[in-house]
Length: 76
Length: 306
Image (cartoon, rainbow over all chains, first blue to last red; front, side, top):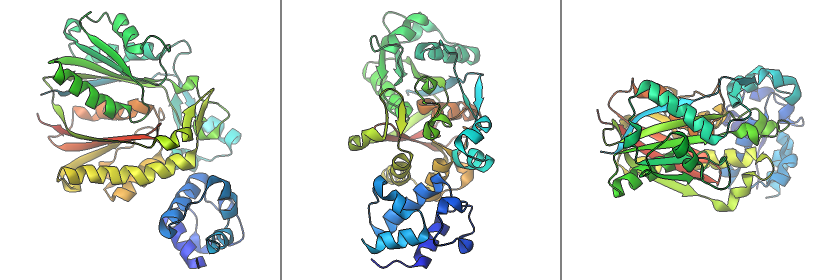
């Protein structure tokens, strides 16, 4: 499926994190940019609901960055 | 009509501060206060068992209400940390409180959803057996089973107990209950040697299940948010309470958050909150909803009738 950077930033906005979404870098782990583990659980849930996919725990490391999320969903 | 007459609880005075664990778990004040929402969690006396905690809650009940022990016909203990495998903790509580030999006593093994299951069980059991007064206890001591090096659980849980006096002279009447279980996911929150919780799995389950479950129960009873004065949600963490509230799209003033000073107290979390609000509550309907171990969930609509 085709997912854009804007789609992911919308999800990050919806997750209501403390991070400044516009300033997030695409290739740096979100947990290193003011997004904590609880936010990440929420982000994965919103992705699952929005794109109707199941993200197993073992795939989580592939979705640590915005680029990683886009790439993961592109293969779905 | 059978329902809740009054509630008392016991929260141990000893507390463990999460601020002292910041370095160990690489967390900051924002995470403590706004995410898990637990500044400190209560720790019981090392030698205390579930029955001792129940007795403490009962002593607090006696301080606020005239209880004639000879009138108690039913004693239920909700716990997953019983004193022993055999016998049931309710029997031990029965003995310690010197309840009548005619009094029925049994345990219910449930975690966070236990209070709502217990409320349905005790009112149904008492009604079917023409009983007028009963005691519903909740008691769990997770300090005995938490791995203090596990970030997922070491910051969250507090020890506590509660007792609810169920009587035919009640002010708070259950209107309807709804329950659910997903046993396929039981491994996500369990205790073999120590407590294990898959935080992401439990969060996803709760965030997706609880709001829909509450909405469905309201729809079934032809009620809307306008008819509900408050939503007493199990205090899993601040993040999960906030998430359910946002997904329910209800005013934050209607959703109490109260665990900051004692932690997630499992099946005692809802009665602890109710105890604080019962005396000041206006005639209204309110919702209880809890979710956790099992995975199990339960919701109820309660009405204050006088």
